[in-house]
Image (cartoon, rainbow, N blue to C red; front, top):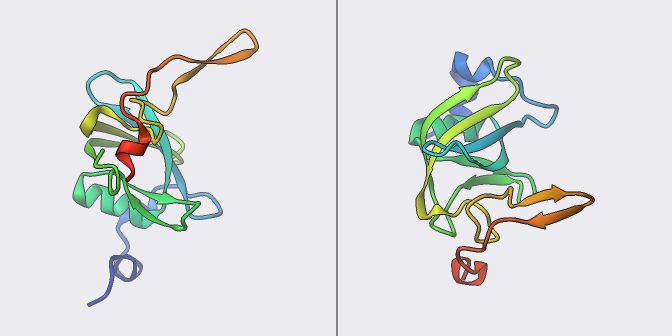
Length: 138
């Protein structure tokens, strides 16, 4: 039985073809809390990750460091349930409206990866650690 990637090559889906991927075949994807509107994180998706995200309605990204698909929450349990997928006007950025299970999106144990704010000439940490990463990633 052919894998999803092989299937996508044989039977391209027009909506996936309308996305502008970079030279590495990736598109930036921003995860936004569907209730509060807060930006939780940014990650990358390739065609297969985007297709799986739409199919599962759970966020699947492409990890550049690991060179593989990454189902958000696969090790932490902090799954992102996707409520809506949007494509920007240039077709080169995805926004996922998500319900963040466990309330933690960042590997540092915080609600959001955007937990530092520029104050003067210094980055100040503004968000508390909700759970020690050592407890999340055992």
